Figure (cartoon, rainbow, N blue to C red):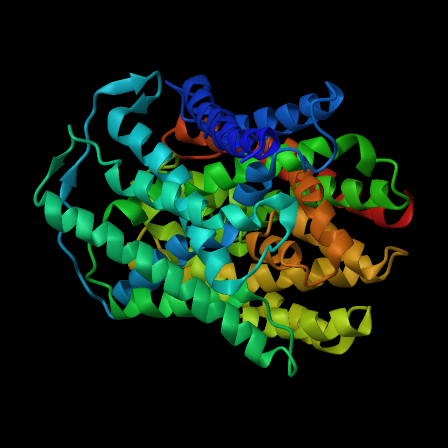
Length: 513
C-alpha cells in the first residue's frame, strides 16, 4: 500500500470523527441553551446548523454542498430512516385509538436522571449518540443492498465499513445506569428493530422501482404505508433501544446535517435567478400556513392548548420541526402521544398527493383539475374538524378524532392550495415544489424532492431552500414555549397578527417580488 492510499484511508476515519464532532455537540448544545425553559432545542439546531455550513464555506474549508465532508451529506440523506420510526409509532397509536385498545404504561426501562450535560440526562445522551450510529449504520447497509449512492464523494467502497461501525456502535451503546427489566431482551429488541427498518427500506425501494413505469411514487410513500401498517399490526410492541433512540434524537440529527448542507449554499443560492421569490414564499408561507392553521383552531374550534395545537399542526403540515419537538416530549406527554397519530393520518392521503405530483412532474406543470377538487375536499374536512373540536369539551377521544380530520383536511388544503397559488405566478414547477415544501416544512415532500422526484437541481438545492424558512421557527417555537410556560395555553393576539403578516407576505412573494 503506497502512501497516497494510506492517507486516503486515514482521511476516511478523520471524516467519521469530524461528522461525529459536528452533529452530536450541535444537538447537545441546543439542549443546553434551552435547559430550564419550555422551548424546543430544534430552534437552536436551525441556527447552529445554518451558521456552521455557512462558516465552513466562508472560511474556505469547504465549497457549497460540503462535498469535502461526504459523511455530512450521507447523514443528511437519512431522513426516511428517522421517519420510519415515527410512522411505526403512528400506526400503533392509530390502532389503539380506532380499536379502543388500552395498554399498560411502558415501564420496561426507567431512564437515568443523572445529568451528563446541562439539559441532557445520561440516558438521553446515550439515545443521541446511538441515533447517530443507527442512522449511519442503517444507511450504509441500505446503500449496499440497494446499490444507491454509488460514486458519491468516493464513499462507495467504504459502505461496508460505514455499516459495520454504525451498527456495532449502536448495539453496544446501552445506558448501564438505566433500570431495564430484561437487558438481553432489550438488546434483542433493538437488533430486530434495526433489521425491520432495513427490510422496510429494501421493500419500499423495490416497490417504488416496480411501479415507476406506471406512476413515479417516491420511496417515502411506500415506507410510510409499510411501517404504519406494521405498527398497527404490532400495536402491543414495547420499544427497544433502536426505536427509543430514533424517536428521541433521529429527526434532530437529520435536521442538523441538512441545515449544515443548506447553510453552505446560502451564498450561491441567492445568485440563482428566481430564487428570491422561492425564499420569500417559503418564509411568509411558513407564517401563513402555520399560524393560519393555529388561528383557525383558536377562533373557530375555541382551543389554544398545545396538546391540540402542537400535534395538530405537526400532522397538518407534516412539519419536521414540530414533529421532532413533539416526539421528543418538548410539548408534554399528551402532545408526544398524539403527534405520531397526526403525522400518519395525512400520509394516508398521500396516494393522491404523490400520484398527482408524479403526473405533474411528467407534465412539467401542476395538474390543476384534481388539485382544485382536493383543495375543496380539504376545506370541507377542515370545517368539519373545527366544528367537532369545538364540541369536544376536553374529551381525549373526541379531541384526537377532531385533530385527525383537521390534520388530513388542512394538509390537503396547504399542499394543493399552496401549489395552486404558486401555479398562478411565473415560478417554474420544480421551484414551486421546493417553495411549498419549505413553506410548510413538509418532511414528505422534502424526502421526495431529495430523492430527485423533481430533478437533480431541486434535489441539490432543497436542503438550503428547506432550511431558510426555519428562520421563522424562532417565532413558532417562541410561541409554543410561551404557551408551555402558561399551562399550555398559547397567546391569541400574536397568532392572529402573524397569520395576517403571512397572508400579506405570500401575496407579495407571488405577484410583486
